[in-house]
Length: 183
Ligand code: XMP
Ligand code: MG
Image 1 (cartoon, protein in one colour):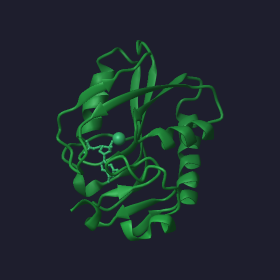
Image 2 (cartoon, helix red, strand yellow):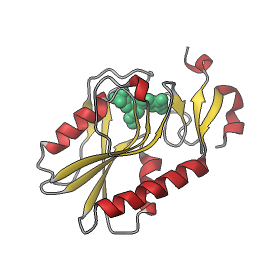
Image 3 (cartoon, protein in one colour):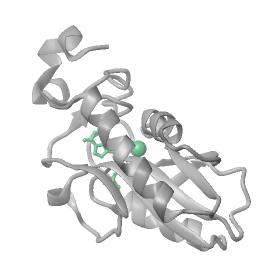
Image 4 (tube, protein in one colour):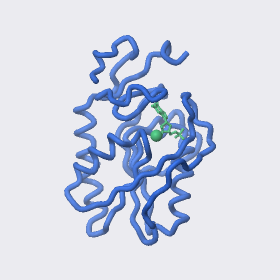
């Protein structure tokens, strides 16, 4: 789906599909250099990170493993509750593993700070975070995100996996959702 297919629902395209691809290539080169010789386990956070995972994994030119977790902190609305619940856990034993969490977006930081601690407590050798988007003005807790794609304004965005009430995930670009859609 292109932004022009749902024009009235969006106020502006923030990051295009091509810009996302270029950024993921750049992040992949950094990740390859940093993990030189170490096996990496990519942990994707369902469902928003599906597109990031698919494109980042293919941008990497080395063996890796992928596993998935589903956590909920939002419900159907646009605000983080801070209460994180595991809806689907990993199938992989993390003992001694180098884990790279792959996320779509970091907003308040509550989800990722909780997730990092949770994965560290399972005996991982290292836990780092890659988030395609970050909203610096929305941060409620400090989270050290090693790989960030784009810092964006504190507005609700959709596309490239990001949804509002499960819609817009299949939009190719990332765009600001028009307030009339959710208010
Ligand atoms: P926190 O606040 O815990 O939230 O950092 C991270 C999770 O919230 C979702 N999120 C968004 N989803 N557009 C979305 O479609 C947004 O602008 C947005 N901001 C946060 C997302 O699921 C992320 O994993
Ligand atoms: Mg998410």
